[in-house]
Length: 112
Image 1 (cartoon, one colour):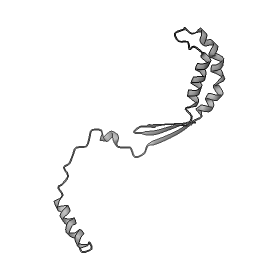
Image 2 (cartoon, helix red, strand yellow):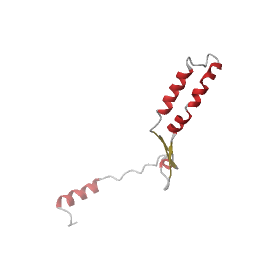
Image 3 (cartoon, one colour):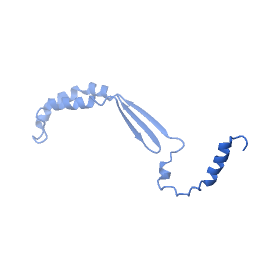
């Protein structure tokens, strides 16, 4: 131990001798599930959903008058306003990233 300075030589050995051995704890039951396999499948999907919504947007506008045949309990007051509200909701999904993380695979879905 002559390669170490005196302070490390003196206190390092004392610290190692004074340390109690760690008690062996049983592994938790979920340890097998938490361990990742050596190789995981990574899937990345890019979905142009906003472009599809814009292309298909005339269809709900053309079908809005058919809502008047629905029972009054299920019919909105203004079907065109309902179509535009749902359209705003669907187009606001652009830029959303959904991560699905499982033990065997990682799936990332990017909506643009």
